Amino acid sequence: MARVKQTATKKKGAGASASTKLVPKGKPTKGKRRKGKPTKNSKPGSAPSEASTRKPRRFKPGTVALREIRKTQKSCNLLIPKAPFVRLTREFSTFYSPDMKRWQADALYALQEASESYLVELLGHAQLCAIHAKRVTLMKSDFQLARRMTGKGQPW
Image 1 (cartoon, rainbow, N blue to C red):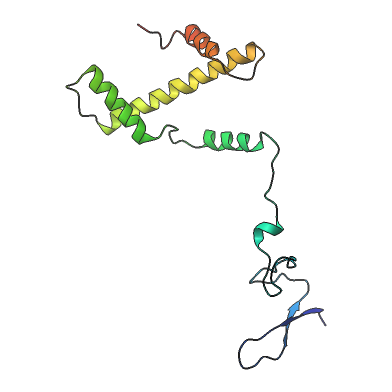
Image 2: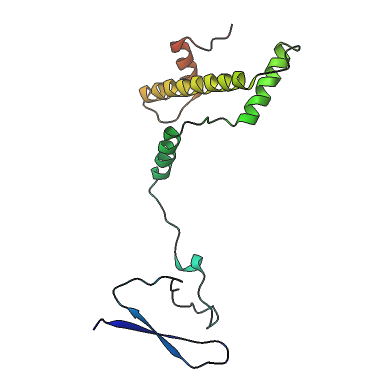
């Protein structure tokens, strides 16, 4: 005969006598999870809140950052939000050419793709410059050196 666990439960309503619930010991129960013991401040009939019983998980420094980097590298979507980029592009285009008011969606997408590619490449070169200087933090001089070395983005 299998071992069973007996749990006393209260019935509400007319049949208020205590009944027992038989559950096989080796198998997990389906349904509501059991709450921890009530704290001193809580009422005797209420269960403790979930936040007071369990602390939030603390990861080692850098773990969450590396997870976010992996997630971003795995995704194919663009990093710069579309609406602000389109507003900025339209502002620049009206500044340099006031008669140019309409843009095709594919043209804006291609421009955003190229902009992000350039920025990622520039950040990579600047990071290498900072590592060469035995630093971890990026500085303005790293970006200037990276731009000078690659020859891209030179002011005309």
